[in-house]
Image (cartoon, rainbow over all chains, first blue to last red; front, side, top):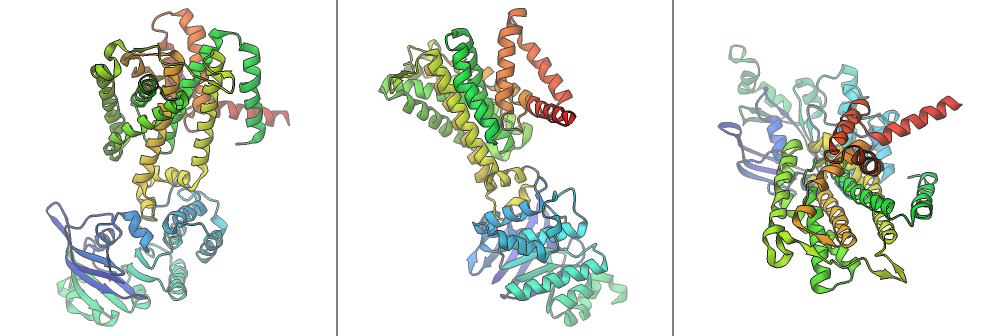
Length: 237
Length: 317
């Protein structure tokens, strides 16, 4: 579904992503881990169209997407969430979803919106202002909701679980698993917590200094000495 | 818009005002001028409110609209109302040259469009063969007779002006409450958040620029057939930018009716009171009024009045 070849992103003299390649099948959940500054969010930005790569190819369902603007990629079925939630701050929770659906899919289906609201436990907050009246976990849920409303085939989740309480985390994780099973949406998930990643994903990719240093099952990857070294430092390896 | 507000307003504008002042040329010309400014103020507020752009260049759209319509009617003899429509189209066409400035935000866009608007005044002055240069155009055809009614009279001009203003207010209202309007509202604070869900934000902003330019051009075109005379320094005068801006902010540019209320209030007060008190330089009072308004009711006159009305109702209960 998603095919990335030799992707390179540079900011001035800094190389944020170097020769990154990844083949992601339909219906896959891939965890993306790596220390801060490893290039995880940059990868999401390159896939969703927020930054322009300096080299490489990204194709989605065999269409080259790098030339396409951000909104067009969203309409093709690439949804994403932001690490720092970016609600449409002037609007209510429901309007956020309606706008996402109207422009992401081209039509409005209120039944589906209500379904998403219920699914994410946001029904009670439908009429609330999205920027002022939501808790962190609700903002995170809204991020997922906006992306869902665009009817995505691939969802890029940037630390949607970070900073949540254990119980909130469990609920949102359950929701994600349900989504995956119910709608067959593929996930690429950035997450720091190794336990979370291990329970959600069958495949994990590790980035360090903009390079892919490991790709495999959680068991393989988290025992890989290079990965452990990049995470904890050499003396523990 | 609620029918119990709209209906009385229509009655006042189409029946009561003509009955009371239909024969008074002075009052009618004041009203027509204030509605012309109201129209530009509305177009300006649409761009600011929905497109998130502050424009200091609407005089360019106004001037191009007036010249386009005047020239088409004089040189090609096209029907006047068609010419007015083409005036709007002309203004829209030249607004495409501002498109590169759309990536600028806030004050940067304002400055870019201010500089840009000068180009067209200079062009109108220099292209003497077409525009008559600094000497301008005179005997521009008057508004025509339609179905036996002569629109060239002051009262006819008044009816045309309010009809266009009301029509554009309705269009503005429709855009604002559509999904495009909601997306535009969202774009101002969180543009990336809208793009990532599939909103073509650049196209939407450009569309608001086109609509705003079109509306402004229509009023410029109307004005040229109403006063029958044009010269570059008049048609592109900075007043066509500044008065609407002052009117819109004074009346409340965030509300639908604010620019209209503001334009009528500002222009009538200025012309009937301040101009008599201080014949030259009376505009400085407008500046002071605007300053006071921003201090006491930043959202302008219209929300201020509605709030007072609501308080009044609550007190009565």
